[in-house]
Length: 543
Image (cartoon, rainbow, N blue to C red; front, side, top):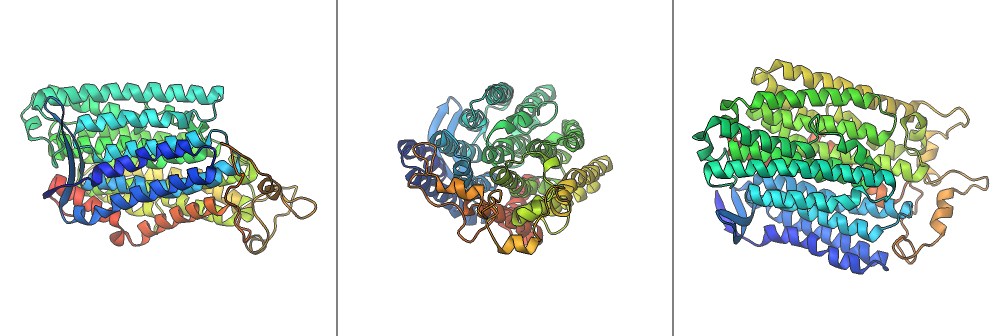
């Protein structure tokens, strides 16, 4: 492994962070504001992607600013595990920013400038988490991520949104305290907090009780954002936020920072061998298996679409944690691969939920009969992602869950194999009724148009008026100004009559296509190559 001094890791953080300044300065010019957002998103992704070939060749890119506190360097380090998270976050920030333009303008949301600025700050913090050189730097960015995402959770400024925001802060800052305590124990025991593939050697010689306490505190702290039960309840309540924020929370940044932190602890602080020797893998696996099954059962009872997706997220995150806890190279591969697989699939589902809300103002599953005829592309993408979440072949979720199943069997942990299979059945149980109702049921008071007529003719965006127009056309014809809106803004309605704006429809189709690519040609997908590199570095086994 070759360490290369480079400014690219810090550039990836600073581009999105500094973008908040022109975004805020452009609050009266929405086109300029959103251009800055897209420019920053594209530049951040380009910088991160430029490091991928070198990382796959065994290089590590380091930006070292010197001593942070005595014995701890303030440095950013782009290694294989960091690139996995940073590449995912920066790539999906591009499409989420595009989607946000259509969503926020479609609903004429208030506070759009604050929203885009907080989004940029959140991605900067997430990339900082990814490239942290040690536990202390990771902790700093981990807490900054909480601060940056709070305005997004409380965006609506209603009593419910403020309550959800306070709960979010209480849980995540509480988890941060546990992480800090664990870091102190690691430092007192070893004299270092630097990440080392396979684990910090000094921990193996430390007092086992001290090592177990440090491991427990770190896992509990990161487990808050990873939504391990019983530390999960902040996540469904955060669904009061706008749908793109839900996508950020559930698919890209916040929850993934939690499972990423757990991955760092298991792979680069303690190492799989020491975790097994300390007997900490089994308890963590039990918590993960309990969470993934129980959250799936709770999801069955949710009628609100976003809350059902929220409990689905709680379940799916525990697939990742379970793969890490089983400690077998195959399960590690499956767990890490489920990070991008889940991101693409869950982002598709939340994008679809947002499009449905914007175009039909429908949020409850019980009211979605026939919506697949009105919005066929959106609901087809939803069906693809839902199939992947259940582990159906040819979608990303199948590949990651295949590795997880093989890993649990190979490790002799058959009970966890059973929990994975049971959760897959429950996934089908809570996703299939949505797809069935959308395509094979219809509301009794109206006779939906044939599917082919819906695809080829007319706008899909609003309710049809007696004169043949739509309320969506009415909305598009009215200008808005300032921080709300459209005045002088881009025309976001798709000119050929697509079911939603191109700003929303393209991200939906992109995320769904990514889910298929990861499922059909996983060996050609860069994420699997990165995961294999990570697992080989931590275990010495090449998958």
